[in-house]
Image 1 (cartoon, chains in turn blue, purple):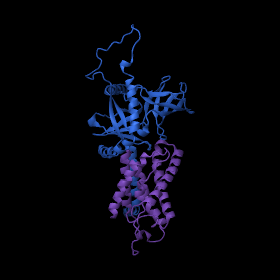
Image 2 (cartoon, helix red, strand yellow; image 1 turned 90 degrees about the vertical axis):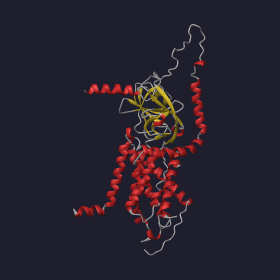
Image 3 (cartoon, one colour; image 1 turned 90 degrees about the horizontal axis):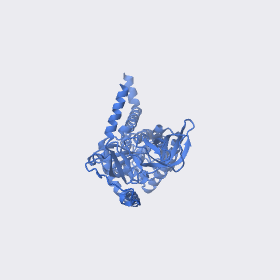
Image 4 (cartoon, chains in turn yellow, orange; image 1 turned 180 degrees about the vertical axis):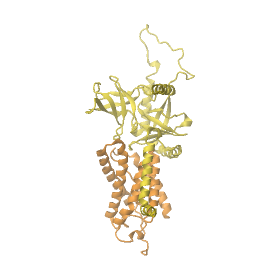
Length: 286
Length: 177
């Protein structure tokens, strides 16, 4: 017994080092899974306040680029207005839906909520974005996030009262269901941890028709994103020798370096879909 | 300024510079400039080893909470805080020199080269352990080694610049131990 105490006293510093390292590795393993992305709501609020303060300076230097993005967004939306379309012949006529706008929100599926980016990182291996809008302002966990020009940015993993943390596409656990515009083959978009703005599209079979420059967008198979949000364009096609699949490198549609405003996308039918899936799973298991 | 106040100010400034300046400079995805651990390099000689490790943990954890990735920087900081006394013992020129000065610098370590060696080894270990923990999840090791080397070079350059701009006045304390 005495020897054990002597041993501990002699190597106290080394044992202390091992304990602290063990604690750190516990933190890494515990908090880096998808569902525990953030340490605590309190830490989130405090660092969020500091970030908001500094973002005011940073934002000033990016006003030009932000403005450009918003103007492009407006252009896109203006071109979708019904007054822009005139039909030349009289055989077809435009009929206005008797319920043009669902004021009660009964049939609404997607709701877009704008949010200011207060912190953004691209240099780490697991990148997060912090939004200055939280639980009190309607944001919810598992909402999708896109930038003003329809590019997918990430998924909200945690919300506190006034801030929300987004797991950006540049994260090792990020996996987004995607589809090729030409041909319609579906795959998964991941990140290999190297170059920001360069994503990988996996699980596309070699029989699929792919070409450089093709567009890849969200498949709409998951309840997080609606169909057709841009993810990126194909930059490089590498045949995987060990499988029958391609590894496709994408140039991301969203520019992660200068995000200032984003939209969170809420799906009102998500709970219903999830409940249905849960039921189906239970039936199979029993 | 007392040692405590000086170190507290350093802590806050280095964290803010790291989070809001250096993390925003995107030189290249292989090169991440780090400077915040200069706080550990500059900690006083007289601090107990357990205390050094605890303070280093606090430093790393603060940076981690800004990046929403708890654990990575804390682990690297604790490791270099543990190794620091060994390196000082090897590199310090004569017996008792660590009593004559407050903290490690080119002057107290007896020249520019020993000090740079001290800074270089700790920087390399810090980056190596940090990127190892990060690369572990991805598993691309060549990338990890090259990233460590390049980032160490850029961090050392930053340390030299900081040493030149903010020269610390090192008072020679009494010889009597």
